Every structure is written in C-alpha cells, then in structure tokens.
Length: 126
Image (cartoon, rainbow, N blue to C red):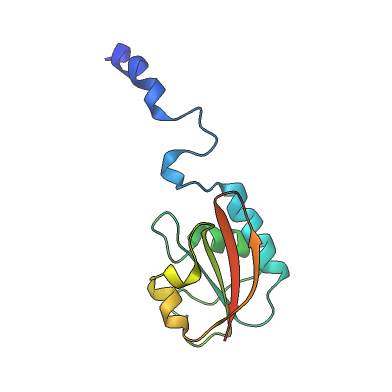
C-alpha cells in the first residue's frame, strides 16, 4: 500500500505553487484583495468572487475581518452602494451570472486592480 502511495505522489500536485483545487488563486491573492478593499471602501460595501465555487467570498471576508473592515452580510447585495468583485482577468463583468452580482442591480464600474496574472478585482457602484 505504501508503495502505491509513493508511486502516485507525483500526481498529488504538491510541488505546484497554487494547488489545482485552488482554481488559480492563492491565499496571498485573497489577502492582497482584502487589503485593496480595506483601503478603497467607505460606507457599506459587499464582496463576491467568481472562483472556487464560492460566490460569497469567504476567504476575502476572513482577511477583511482580520483587518476589522467588515462587509455587509452575504445575504445583502441589493441595498448596498458598493460591490467588490473578484473575477478571472479573461472574463468581463457582463459575463458574470452569479446571483450576488445580478442582485446588486444597475452598476457603474468605478475602479479595477490586477490581483495576479489570473484574477482582477473590480469596484462597482450604483
């Protein structure tokens, strides 16, 4: 049994910088995103992401909590003035079909930041 584990160890992805299950994003990217949001938000805001099948953006919410910059609850997207969205750089906001994005309503892209070669952060306002 141990021999089979060792034989298959090359397929585990241990040597990769970002494990395959991370969907091309690292914890450092989430921390960078939270720092940008903390510096560029005033008043009520919320966050969402189109990554790791986690539209509620729990990794970003964690880092924002550490920074003592709390977003609105993940159930509140329609009544807030500002939304931060983390999406792949090769995807436009108009291609985003998540409930969190659609519930926000009419929007204007305010600013954007490159988080990594794979992801960008957008600030949208009503």
